[in-house]
Amino acid sequence: IRKSNNGAQLKQIRDKVERLVHKYIAQEVAISFITQVVSEINDEIIKQAISITEHKLGKTIYKDIRYCWLALGSEGREEQLLRTDQDNALIYDDDGTIPDIKQRCLQLAKEVTDILHEVGYEYCPADMMASNPAWCQSIDEWKKTFSQWIYQPGEQEIMMSTIFFDYRPVFGDQSLSTSLTDFLFETLDKQEVFLHLLAKNALENPPPLSFFRQFIVEKNGEHKDSFDIKLRAMMPLTDAARLLILSKRISGENNTCKRFLALADTEPQNADLYRM
Image 1 (spheres, rainbow, N blue to C red):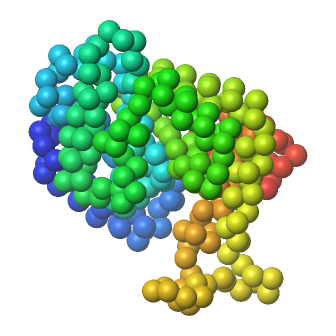
Image 2: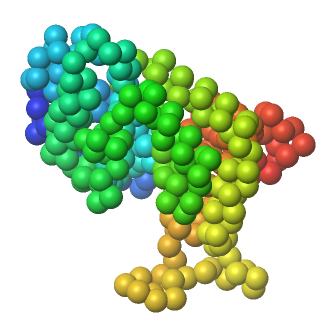
Image 3: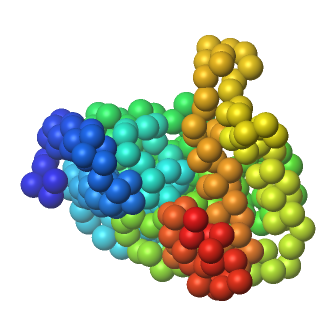
């Protein structure tokens, strides 16, 4: 990966990974191991895409800019197996000394998302990518955004929180991500009601089994009578883990399984439940 000079070369490598995933699944290798391997490779591809872009635009342009590339969604949780659409963001430190810093970061983000698209990661239909000015912000702007979501939580803000609060630093100055997490926890301490709303949202996704222990299938649409494993089985667990980890103010754990294991350590009385 680190020898690759363009998106086409990175795509060839990621195509091999796809075939490797299929072999692992056929051999019934533990999913936790597969996701760990794939996440490491995905991270390296992202890092190389950024390095290629910096070299293309001029390394000196970015040497004095403190920025951090954030993975969101399934990639942020280190749970991405197959190539999905992109979910990413960028955070930078604007101390007023670098002119046009936002435009420089946006230019970098646009080039990187284009390379990732060439690799096979589709553009996000909702434009939740670092190339969108709304998701390429300074640390102070991100803090204002998080404050708005937490203090003025509507349906849209809750939805954004479920996506963005799984952010994970992949490249750059990770202290920016740490600073944002510290601010997030401090804000939650002052606005505890937000977690209740996050819990209400999590409960709106019903469990996969009905009262009579039958799978809940889709009632209409293209996939009528089919079982949606992501919506019915995985999302309730993901939402629960996110909510509980935030309530405990535990940082550094984004993966759903690892979150439950961390919760088991903090709540020995519920350890058996978390480890099921």
